[in-house]
Amino acid sequence: MFSIPSLFRLDYRISMSTMRHMCACKNTTNNSTKNHPNDSVKIAAKKTYKRKLTTDGPDLFQFMASTGKTARNVKVHPEIPPYLDPASLRADGAKVYLDVYGCQMNVADTEVVLSVLESQGYVRTLNSNEADAWLLVTCSIRENAEDKIWKKLNYIKALKSHGKLSKNMSVGVLGCMAERLKTQLLEANNVVDIVAGPDSYKDLPRLLAVNRNTGQAAINVLLSQDETYSDLAPVRLSKDSVTAFLSIQRGCDNMCSYCIVPFTRGKERSRPIHTILDEVRALSDQGVKEITLLGQNVNSYRDVSERSLSMYTPRDSPATRKDFKTVYKTKEGGLRFVDLLDQVSLINPEIRIRFTSPHPKDFPSEVLYLIRDRRNICNSLHMPAQCGSDKVLELMRRGYTVQAYLDLIQNVREIIPGVALTSDFIVGFCGETEKEFERTIELVKTVKYTKCFMFAYSMREKTGAHRRLQDDVPEDEKKRRLNLLAKTFRQTAEELHKEYIGTTQKVLVTADSKRSSDDFQGTSEMGTKVIFPKLQVPDHNGILRQVVPGDYVNVVITETNSEIFKGTCTELTTLTNTESLQSRKEQYSASTF
Image 1 (cartoon, rainbow, N blue to C red):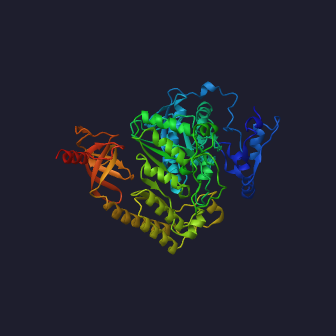
Image 2 (image 1 turned 135 degrees about the vertical axis):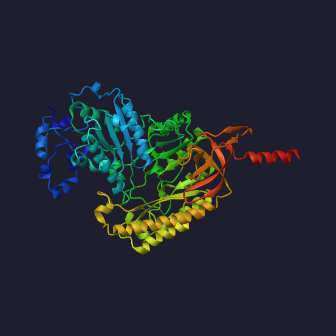
Image 3 (image 1 turned 30 degrees about the vertical axis):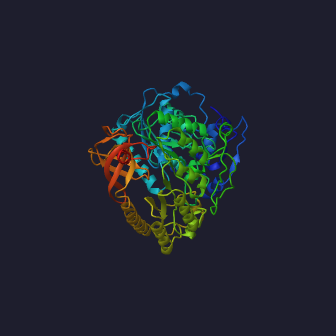
């Protein structure tokens, strides 16, 4: 038996509620919460303590008795149990099925998970029926995102009960939903064995080993102030893909009142710049042609590591735009996003660079001028507005007014002619009236976005809105507003896209079209999907050859709608080549004449 001090490091700050959640019991009874009245739990959850326990403290059984839980089938983390041989962490040949939900960040996280597991002998399988472990990488941003996970867990439980999956298969819930619900996942339907938050992926081999060797459930949902996984080389899920995601920053400090991210992914921290550049070089060597830099608040990137500051000189760039506010004190010093973007874009001029998801406050002019001047940084910017009402924006704690946002849009378009803009919108937020919603409609019509991500508001526990505001817009009204906003966007986008008919777009070929193997699909610089027939086209020397994924081609646009372009491929090209073959022929003819 080991005592409580051996389980909790003295340098962890652990709230009373987190200590309770760090224990996992699959056979918890309905009476397990009687020793924790709601009022006392809420009070305890608001207080944190520096745990300083003596080495002769109570043992595990005494601790479990005090919480009203049984010590059977329980593991407390993060300490490795003394009886667990490190060699038993390996699972040579064990097959893991990775089930990914949510944003691009979860895709990048899954590649980290695969890297961790492969280092311990696990092998990825695309067939869930033969898996020894089924891991769900989850999203918690909205209620319907979690509903999908609950449905999948019930589905897995049914398969197990009917003998279609091995009863010894470990089922794990990873990511934001794991961080938000913690032990509730273990208690709900008796199918989850592993719960791991976004900062505990390195601990997965141990969690799985505990379950595999003892049959006990295991959980680690400790958030870190410095974990960025910068010391790991992610294993790409789609090795043949010509595009890749690269995480540069984790967590968020903005504390928008509707958002659960600061509570599920923790405080902002950025990877050292040299580790990012090394990963870009590796992706370049693998033939990747488009890299998307990822972060919860990607353009607030700030590297203050000594090694980085000794290698690079930061630009004199303001942290936040004028007329935009933050809820935190301005962070001084370090290498900023403009420094990173500069270095990344120089590695290979034939690799397109994108980034998401930014905050409008973190767009100093230096970033905009760099995007304008570098051909391989896409002229496509995501500008999340969220709402067109100043009152609602204030309740959301976004830190700007509609006018400040429009001034930024004007500045962007002045510096980067032809830039394509995308955005996020939430309808039906707390207290939103019909008139305030109409202002959002007007904003969409005014800015004319090429793509919008639109959602009905879903209140999440722990957020500022949950603590201080009332979710008072009826669900049917939210749906009506969402449908109207989507209709408005489609109309404006369709009108905007018609202006591209007859233009030539430089397209990165990504794959066969999903609708026809006779067509290719790719992405234009503005991020729009482009469909075109498979044809042999001339290269820069005028020699005909078949187009393949990873090629850049010029496509003349012949048809558009609110979502995609269609056209005809005319020639192969490169990012650094600004002339078409036809224009070169015309110049040659003029000179010889």
